[in-house]
Amino acid sequence: MDFFTPIVDDPYWFGQIAVANALSDVYAMGGTPITAMNLVAFPLKDMEISVLRQILQGGMDKLLEADVSLVGGHSIEDKELKYGLSVTGIIHPDKILSKKGFRPGDKLVLTKPLGTGIINTAIKGGLASDQIIEKVTRMMAHLNRKSAQVMQAFGAHACTDVTGFGLLGHLCEMVVESDYGVVLTTADIPVYPEAGEFAAMGLVPAGTYNNRKFREAFVTFDEAIDNVTRDILFDAQTSGGLLIMVDPADAVGLVQKLHAEGVEDAAIIGEVVEKPKERILVKAH
Image (cartoon, rainbow, N blue to C red; front, side, top):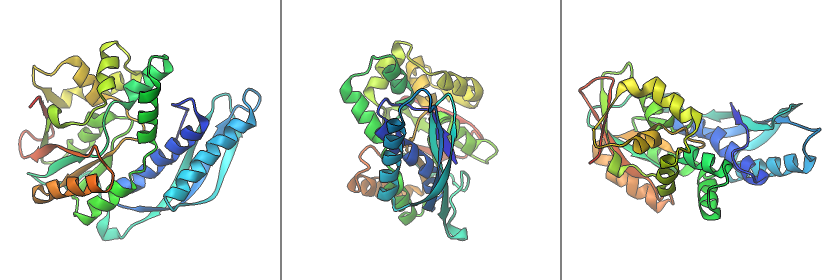
């Protein structure tokens, strides 16, 4: 189950993004979402009902794209608009992907660029161009369906989706209490160029600062890595990509297949190491 307040002004696109985000947890475990129920909180006295219709239409269109059946839902009147879904999926018990299960030498593959939290903050401040708003909106609404199908075909060892805890926060969930660590290379990590510009202006959401405060103790940065880059790596994402751990012999083929399937930003960003355990090392190159 996942729902949140609007992150874009367009109600139709908000509905699309909310659905893509809610389905992502099932995709991240290697599952296939089958049914969904709408969850709605709506300020009926302060907002036209046509807004809700557009949100629900956007959500319905995204569910149709994902071949997921809407089987009901629940709505309440609230002062703050919220929308999301409860999703049910299926998977063979022997094929469930968890946040563990990775091995030394495994490569890390990320399927969407980082920086949506920072850019959404700039959007709220009226500082983002129409071009970047459209670009980020469409990416947040992009289903992780193809990425999930491809990683299954290549026998991924572990996976998570990158959302509110940011790349480093979700990666910490994977490596803490495991027997291994991870090395990341910032030069290889896909990032929206505008995210760096906005972060340098101080347009960093509170969630990103909270992620950094909570998890920075598990991360060792090269001295050459500046604060802007660190903020981006901790940036709280909305409907982000999948973070996949796969055998090194399959990593290049996995990325090539993702590119062929339209997941154009997919990239190998690091690898699993035996030491130091339970830590993330972040290198510039």
